[in-house]
Amino acid sequence: MTSKTLVRPALTVLAAAALLAIGYFAGTRYAPATSAMSPASMSAPASASGDKTDQKTGRKVLYWHDPMVPNQHFEKPGKSPFMDMQLEPVYADEGGGATGVKIDPALQQNLGIRYATVRRKDTTEGFDAVGTTQFDESQAYVVQSRVTGYIDRLYASAPMQHIAKGAPIASLFVPDWLAPQEEYLSLKRGGMDPSLLEASRARMRAMSIPDGVIASLDRTGKAQTHVVLSSPESGVVSELDVRDGAQVLPGQTLAKVAGLSKLWLIVDIPEALALSVKPGMTVDATFSGDPTQHFSGQIREILPGINTTSRTLQARLEIDNTAQKLTPGMLMRVRVSGQQAVSRLLVPSEAVITTGKRSVVIVKNANGGLQPVAVTVGNDVGNDTEVLSGLSDGETVVASGQFLIDSEASLKSVLPRLEGGAADAASAASATSSPASSPTYETTGKVENVSAADITFSHQPVPALGWPAMTMSFNKPAPDAFPDVKPGQTVHFVFTKADGGYLLTKVEPAGGAQ
Image (cartoon, rainbow, N blue to C red; front, side):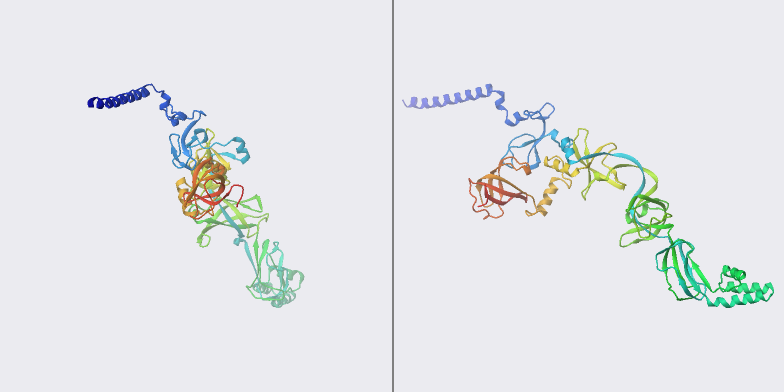
């Protein structure tokens, strides 16, 4: 009796185990193949070449990511490990890698985007500089008195007065000339020997009596005690050191006349280019008041010494000013060109974005995508910039709207930021940014949980960040902040990005503040 009682439970257990084994075998043997596939593999099967394709749209998928953490890429779809949301696909035709970002043609037209072609051109070695016009010191003339006399009349009234060649400057009364002229006339009337007359003429010449006055003395028989000093050249009276009635002595300077038919142009050359400047280089100068007027010349000499204030070297050249359109002191825009042409790769200067660390050009690919390319730039050539590396002849670059294109690409997580990678930007933001200076975002959501450190919301989409509706937590500025917020409430809240997370700045019941 006892043995039968023990055998029956044992047989029951063995039968149950056998039934379980048969069921397991049948389930694995005859189950449909689709039941073993995961949702991830169903939504994006891999092709024979390894490409991933979205079955719903038929578009090629590059990778999946969480829009909140766009730099983390995933090979398969699924739930984000960072947020309570599904990973989103990044399609090949949206950009990424070598494809670049694509912008609708109508949007390009609205943004005013223009394109330019990279071209190779033979240009002379040169650079842009500034110059200042000055008086040509080789055309400076001095008007002096050779006798002792008095200013009988001053024709030039003030410095910087224009004066023509041969125009009178001052009339001198010279009393010492009277005696030798009267002596000469007496000898001539007395019929003296010609040798005595010649000796008298020599004495008058020694007293600086001009030959014209002596000739007039022979012709008229009247002594002259006045002499007119005239300008030796057309120009301006740069200095006037006498006044009416003043006494003058031999060798005293009465005035200086500066010619204007030629001027000096003093070009300030940056110290970095000092070694590349040589005499004979061609200079084309324009005045901002009339850019259509060009004045050309060649560098005559390099002045020694560097200006310690501006750190520039000065070069001097002579420019023609026969028409007297220029005046000393004018600031000129100067293009200094070399004597030999050099082949250069050029792009419009406006196409180059200089970030401080590097130079970037937005290039249009063969498939129509736009992407940034780091370039090494050389000297400016007029309105163009020389490109030493990074581009090829014939490529198409964006000449306007580059920053708008970069912003569009960044929203799609396609193009890197121009100031560096995302890691550099994140570290710089955490080190320098503050909630007060960061942009703010707002949305509406339901409070799911409240703790001392954060509040969890099931919130609506945030278009400014590209977020869909999801559930996530936001940091509180202080443990006792927002004491009236309770789970289950529908609230409107404002937040900003700070210290690698998102910080709440305002939480109020939906529909207005309490």
